[in-house]
Image (tube, rainbow, N blue to C red; front, side, top):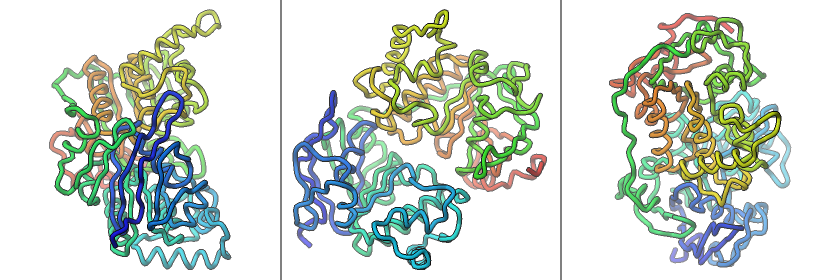
Length: 507
């Protein structure tokens, strides 16, 4: 076919203080797997929201199968054959798979018919899924299958995927790629957004690169190195974090028999975790999503209280202390969910700085907030971590996901913690920003702080960790030196093969 499936011509969209897209033009062919690349804030989200009918462009036009295409809302885009799987899943935990899929339909058929269609599509595309299972009991990979199957039931012409592998295991990534290749072979086009450039190279045949809202280049990822693509995205040489040798000091944080029930029905109980972390050390903790990462962070931050003597910081029992008291003592944490947990969406960056930095940065005096001091602190975070925003007065929700992540991590690092616990520090962050965050964590350790990095990105953990441990069903393996660990050994640890090394306590 000479006419492309989708043609974008001169798309432009501006918001107060920023031009999100400027004269963006490119084509997507039938059955093509096309990557959309760019650093955080480059305009990728605005562009795909325009295609999906969530954003109306200020200028430019689109054609779909040669006909003018200007969806006023997602319902119209879906009816035209555009489907989208968002980075953040929109599912209800207490409902089953079929019920969740019905919620995304304009005129859903009876549940029995939906369940039958889910089974059919599941078998057809190699996406194992039981329509009767409760969503809250599913793994992250299975939840993504729900979203994908919901899209496939629409028989889409174009499937947009935004950071689809950020919460998947390597095995689940392979299943996803096989599905996408099958869809492509059947004529469905894929517009694929990811910061994992090796995945782009393995899957995509064309790539359009955005920088500051404009198209700055195109390439064939199969013939372009990940480093070259990253440097095209940022317009400069890519910095590689330097893991210099550093002295490791005394034990500063110790967990002894840390156990805790699941905080809610779909949570994971912590089971007899024993661990010592030393000053100047980076401890990496890996694990498939849903194996107790959030619960461990909560137990360390003080959001989840524990029994006496289970958590000791600087040789003092702190299991009973709330988060602010632990922050004052020097134990800080940054959770995985940045929007709504790490940051309040409708509050400004200055106000979000106050939420966690008041005690350590002296942002209140005699009961009154020191707004000037808070603004200066927020500006310092923005500058030091290259947060793309007009200023600290902007609301957290106005930032792209990656820029908000930089602000959240920077806010904690700049408080000079004695121990910093971070969960998914570079989730949804571009290659350049990820390198900067990892370097900042290494610098923090070099200055004597202990750093615990919980991540599903094994490459990240191997790059910066001194020791590595794995979480599986709420149990933690014995930490091992990260240097020399093989992929096979790590895979076994993530799958629970370390159980022989630790004591068992049934929840």
